[in-house]
Length: 89
Image 1 (cartoon, rainbow, N blue to C red):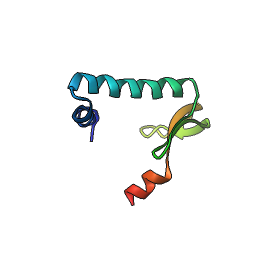
Image 2: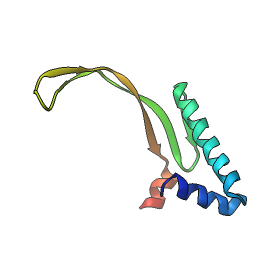
Image 3: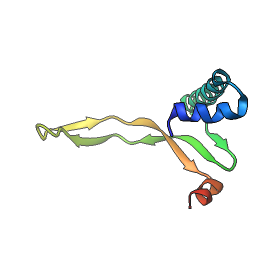
């Protein structure tokens, strides 16, 4: 399922494609803004989105084999909730 499929699924509940697109965009924007502010987003029964840190490390250039430094960075993480895990299994 991609974003267009999700909008179509939401449209069956809310009525119009335009309203569904606005609703999906609003939810995704809210999650993005919260993660950008390093907040955690918890959705009961679904899971939680949080920001994790990746440490700086040394990597290799695949063409030359030279060592390169890869800087530390923040990455989004998703931890599924119990209800979601049970639904999948």
